[in-house]
Length: 315
Image 1 (tube, rainbow, N blue to C red):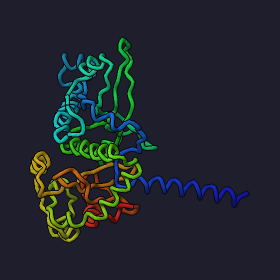
Image 2 (cartoon, rainbow, N blue to C red; image 1 turned 45 degrees about the vertical axis):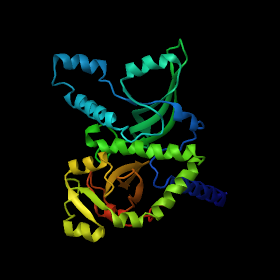
Image 3 (tube, rainbow, N blue to C red; image 1 turned 45 degrees about the horizontal axis):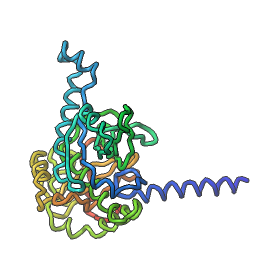
Image 4 (cartoon, helix red, strand yellow; image 1 turned 90 degrees about the horizontal axis):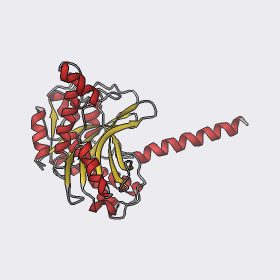
């Protein structure tokens, strides 16, 4: 009996580990949405966040109240307005408030909507971003929502509470770029699993890109022990330490000379992607391993070591 229990536990552990391995470097939650090709005809709506009515009422009398929350929402909305810069999957991009979207949905036509939300990590509830299909039945109030894709949208600093001002505009822009790459692959006939396998193969072939292009690192997000000499030792390819504004401008203009590093959360695992600014493709991947420290939100030695070895964590 004890042997049977041990075998059962071992089998369950194997399945769990296999599931995590299949997740690989792709930050999206597994998706089984079946009607990918139909999405190509739907306008993409970038949904702004409203200030909650109670907050707006109190703030009108006492502007100092909820100032952080209102700034946070304004930051997210500004990033959302810029997120569709490279969107080509469907014919139109609209930036709407919830009320404007609700009014449009009255015609009964489906819309593809990028919006903020929350997702479970098995331990905490974290901020997330979802690409959903929203549709109303004419004459009805309720909106039917189907999730196409989703991913955590959080930083090392804040894993539970929502603080959009921890982000830069490039984070949301690249999230949508990667979602578009996923949709294009699925519309071309790839399954969710095949897409993930193809991304792993891309990483294993990513070294030439890493060698040729210059990594721009945010000089304010480096761990204090990472001197320029230490950075060059850990990442033996072209690299520059620059202000964040330089990175943001290079991402916005899709400057093909550069790469940049961005943090992503995979369930409860910290990871960094090395992104090609030319097209938003991930060319290397560094994943936290047991025994490493995680300085929030600093880029540490394990990050640079992982990014310098494309394909090493693509398993």
